[in-house]
Image (cartoon, rainbow, N blue to C red; front, side, top):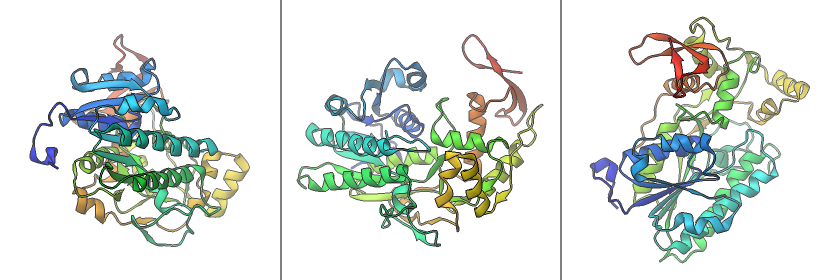
Length: 388
């Protein structure tokens, strides 16, 4: 199979790529890069009437020429035969990601994945599916002992230390592999699973997804008074989108699961330090960002005392440095990762531009390196933020 991007070929117009959950954080970047690479894209959204989610897709370059949007719900199997019809590739990215998940998250993730894969198997035109899983399906549920995780590792469903979100990723990915292996080998589509870590980087809309919610909390001392001793694998959203396209184009990675993460992993205290250094003095108002690392016992006590589900969710992640081996992504997909300091800094600036961090005045770094004061309390007639 030709690697279009690396050889600078323009994909023929008959190549249609389906991107599920197209308005999501990762998916929106995938759609953007696919359009820029010359692909025709069909994106699914739950409602075409939701302008908040549809407009960022319509605003992408080349969208008027090569982007089609259709309605499809993960819980409705009847929606997917029409969605996959005529597609050569599928990027199945749509999946629920509440920071604090319930049992329903598991059901939607598993059944939604199977609905898409069953439609792909029956379609006849689909050559390959790239499925977005997570490092949660690799390292969660294990004791906090120092070890290096790779694609051979699976999250431990038997553990009491595992949350419903992580369960949903493990169960959905295993269901996908089981279904794919049950298909006749001579006629089944190719399948590659990507397992990105905690995704950061510029936002392309004001949708308040899980990553943005966490970063937003870190920008305010009152909602993030101290950093728990948690180490996270992190990756730039643009690298994740690039990995999806390379996995789609790669003829050698069918049947593979591939970790997509920058190394080394990052302590939350280090992340807080970077944010403090960049944003401690911004225009007329400074962000107050805590760089304190709280002892494990105090983090658990705080979560219990405040009944804060977000802090409660990290209690099983307290411990030693988390390490991943991303060699496979470098070998199969030639991945080179963006420095996380750059990713998270650009993420916050983009969140400021979209008004996702609720402060009246903040500074905005222009491309020439100068700082302007941006007023987020009002907008121009065309919806743009006023820059002074």
